[in-house]
Length: 285
Image (tube, rainbow, N blue to C red; front, side, top):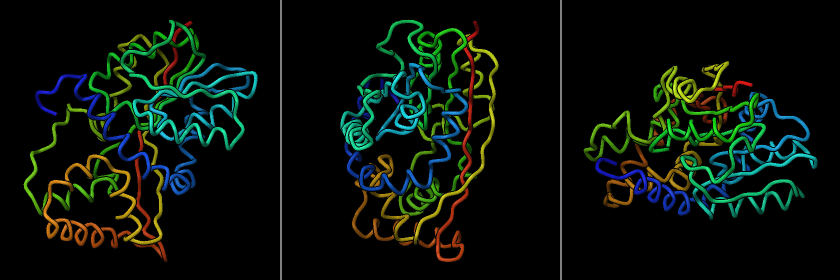
């Protein structure tokens, strides 16, 4: 992303996420079953309760916004924001299926929230903030739209070595073609992996009672082949790199990824450890 303006980064991400929306819808049930605990943790950390008016940033195909809407109930409301209209189309279909009338999904940029100051009782965000080109600006916007006393609860990925299911693909591609070293300051999956990264930005934005916890869990795939297939259908950055490879190189990458995944076999499944940074903060009264 060297040399790109923030707007170019955002435009590229919008295209990427729209492109993989079909893959996310295909794998939606799998990820809902495997990652439901994170949605519940975010709803709890944001102190959601009946009657609240809440905001979810980077809603994608609807989580944790849908759980948040169920939590605040018909007397409350949930607004879900995301760059990718096609991802939100999936979220709207799910909201209709769940008969949720109190949730609205709209496109927007987290670094320039289209809402009045002190509009929301709480804010949630799952795996969104690390992709933003200007995270401190987004933190300031979150602080602005929160009502005094309201909480922000966010989940971002922790370090690569603690999340092998994410790193295996890049390691495999690097064995086949030369890639430039990753820029730790550029938007990306592990941009906020270090302790205090996001917490410090929220404090700088004027938020208080900040907590930053590394949360360990795991998720399982039926086979190494299933893991590989899901990766190729939902991981936009991996898709971008794979598109540049020759067919023989793609086959070698697949062999390396599936081979590496088998070391995580447990019983009949491939079970990966994961580590997530759970960060929460409150706007002072």
